[in-house]
Amino acid sequence: MRIDYETSSRLNVFLRVIGRMKPGVGVAAANHDMARIAERARELYPITRAADTHYRVEPMHEDLVRDVRPAIVALMGAVTFVLLIACANVANLLLVRAAARERELAIRAALGSSPWRIVRQLLSESLVLSLAGALVGLLLAWAGIKLLIALAPANLPRLENVNVDLVVLGFATLAAVLAAALFGIIPAIRASRPDLADVLRASGRTPGLGGGALLRNGVVVAEVALSFVLLVGGGLMARSFLELSRVRPGFEPAGMLTFVLGGRGGRSLEERREFSLQMREKLGSIPGVTAVAAANYLPLDGTTFNSRWGKEDAVSDPSKFQQANLHIVLPGYFEAMGTKLLAGRTYDDADSRPDHLGVVIDDRMAAKAFPGENPVGKRLFVRSRGQEPEWLEIIGVVEQQRHEDLSAPGREAIFLPLGFFGHPVPNSWAVRVSCAAGQPCDAARVSSAVRRVVNELDSRLPVSNMQPLQALVDRAMTPTRFALVMIGVFAGVAAVLAAVGLYGVLSTAVRQRTAEIGVRMAFGATTRSIFALVVGNGMKLSAAGLAVGLVAAFWLTRAMTTMLVGVRPTDIPTYLAIVALFLVITLVACLVPARRAASLDPTNALRSD
Image 1: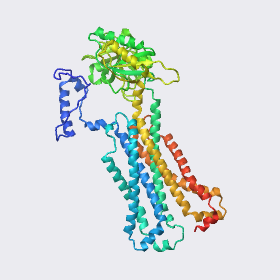
Image 2 (image 1 turned 180 degrees about the horizontal axis):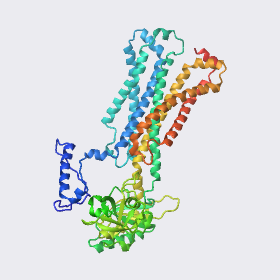
Image 3 (image 1 turned 90 degrees about the horizontal axis):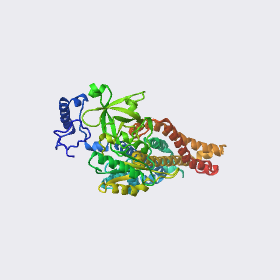
Image 4 (image 1 turned 30 degrees about the horizontal axis):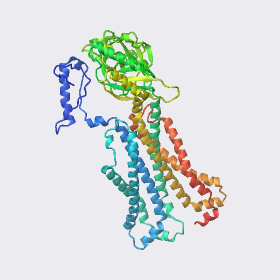
């Protein structure tokens, strides 16, 4: 932009300033300089002084990742939880396997193997398992990258650089080695110091299965707790996505095709006015088109433009001015967009002229400026053109359009007609097409006709970003959908792993207590009571894990606050639903071991000892 910064207005606030700092200069030093500049500006310019304006320097990297950092951190936490659960499962299996091999390891020790040699052997086996798992994980990651990119939000920085590179390979290898070392060392140490006399005197039943029961049960409780936290996170994201899908954005996106029009479309005021009217008329004559809308920018397209406004007190005190989004619209905009009129009226062609001092505001602005009152007929002091504010009379109130984000209402808005600013040709256009009730609406079917109309009016004007308005809504929902799918996948994997771990512990307990079960059945215990005994043990472990998980979830899900929409991190219905789901998962994991125990032959069970 060709701007003479020496003579141009100091009141413009539409520019974003980007600077490169000198080598060795930190953010603190830059902010110190900016504080001095702001102080000088407050001395020179009354409006800057009245508004108490300050400036600050922010690193660009932090600015770029601010919106996606919470989701990335949450996903990294989910990955860590799944890794911990998987490692806990492997550790549990290694404990059982080491107990089952206790006799073999005791013989090795009796023949002269040192404890370190036995530990080294078992750690080597753990390392092979971990590296094999890492290899399979890398293959799955390579296959899943395309899905990740397809689901990722558009504002995810460096999305094009997501791939399996040397850093990823190094991280996976390091994670595998650490997992083998951390979660293989306890089973290895336990197995390296057998009581030779007791083990070698024992009969065919493996006595070591009973020795690590407390540790195995503790690992399962930890798995259940970690899985519960992930499932709660997934449940909260599912609730958020459901709430987001119910949000009314302040317009009807179905059946709307949008596009951006470049160029001017005429030099004089009358030429520009005529061009906009002709464009609206010719687009409206396309078969299937029922309405045409145009504005300086459309909802959710990533653009905002602000204006200052105030009430009576702002006349004498400029610090009372506030900011609002400013929209420059073609008459008929609200009707075409499907935005509800709540009070008064909207613009017609007769209003679109420089001397018309009527203004349409949204209901958020009305509630802020005139709480509990009917704002129609009242005045606002608005600075939207020139250096001086103007009194504008409110002629209508419409429902708020969500322009910046679906998850939050955003800033209040002021709407002014094109003619108020000398009929600039609007950048953004939208046409509404007719749709059959209950049928998918393909707004893109008129795209060729739209391009033909623009070319007929002025072949020099470029048309870009042609897409359905629904695509902008879908894009606004992408971050929540991305977090929902990712956390949901991790939560599902975690739940399966926890169920497998619980199944393994109960199966081991059944093997360990085979003789006891035989005695119980010999003394009259029924199949149903044996079944209930095993299921009860599983439910006790699950209940202990859920208790720990509830406390952890209440604490950890606070980090998801910025990712949630319309739901609190401590949403009670979500917690209750996940508790019920986990009890079902526990019951399913208990069924096979319980049925196996209940179907034991008492005679064979008693012989097993």
